[in-house]
Length: 230
Image (cartoon, rainbow, N blue to C red; front, side, top):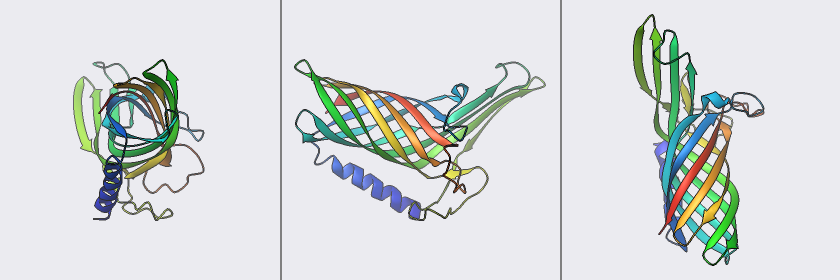
């Protein structure tokens, strides 16, 4: 019940914001997701996983033609993969980790006119992600015998208001709540928005990991998006 309460509150805040937005866009895109593998927050490029995102982004004008606040609600995939060997050969192993989130970003966006109807934009802001699904898949070949298995991702019911406690922790369990900082840039016309976005996760994925002094085991997502203004 507690996890559902937080999901519903987040959705209500994000959805209600669009009622008062001056404009909005329906957005979809490709995510190039990864998970940091050392204390400095770096990733292994070989572990990059292709996923997707879809959702709605609002636009509140703060300074006409110059500055906007853009809250949103997205369904987005994150994660990473590990692959060893060559597919079809002996001793091949591949595992993908692909959690799905409802994500609520809120970016402060600066705009610069280019011609009469086009603008360049750049912005940044926080995001909150709420884990709602996803799978871990494993493909392997051992002694010429191939196998494929799928397992649903298990989220802990951690309460983000209890920062020093982790409820429902365990092996193979990840935190339900993700949070971090977004960076975004791109071009918009009268009807289209082309963007590139980067999500820098600040929360460790593994439930039961309270040590946030390093940047290991955190989400990193580069996204290429196309938006249609409505």
